[in-house]
Length: 240
Image 1 (tube, rainbow, N blue to C red):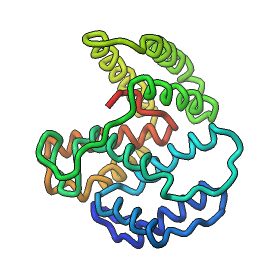
Image 2: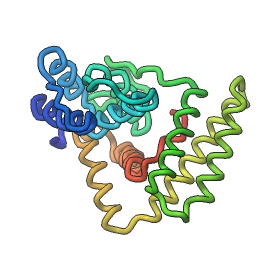
Image 3: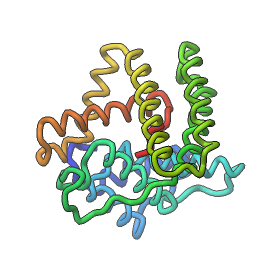
Image 4: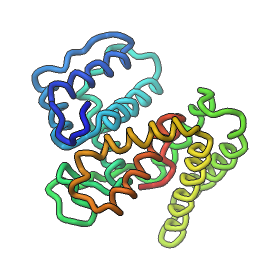
């Protein structure tokens, strides 16, 4: 995939097709006709390839959770998850569309509503458990993961929180997210950090012309954090 927000639709579709094939254990499901139009629209909206793949991953997580799979997944089934992950990426980095307009300014493409707080907490706990089982993080993170998991379970028990209590819970999720990602980021060597920085800049390249230097630096930092999470198999704990 190129560094442009509006990439070549055919190449974008081929990359998605290859990724979907791997997720389907080698079964090739062609992206043609209406499916090609659908995936092309993601490219036109500026969805980075890795963000689209993360949305596909999210669909497969639920698919596998239902038990043994029965048939190959079509890309059309992944659309809602791809757009949800894209919206999360846009909220965290501060870009909204291919024009690079910052959040808060007028845009022809509204941010979609994300999951509820209880649903978010369920997803986070599930992915933290998966990250621990996968061994993506070494034993040095066990205490921190235990601490984060306990706080999330406590937050989940207060499903009906409202007002200031809810705002405090959301603030605490953001703090936990920063703590966990910060620890993982510090554990990376210089080469890994440089690679993640390059990848983050590639994701944002097509939006950079519409952003101030300060906004771009902030967006790059958020994009690096997301890549750190992906590298370690961690969820976004912050409720964005």
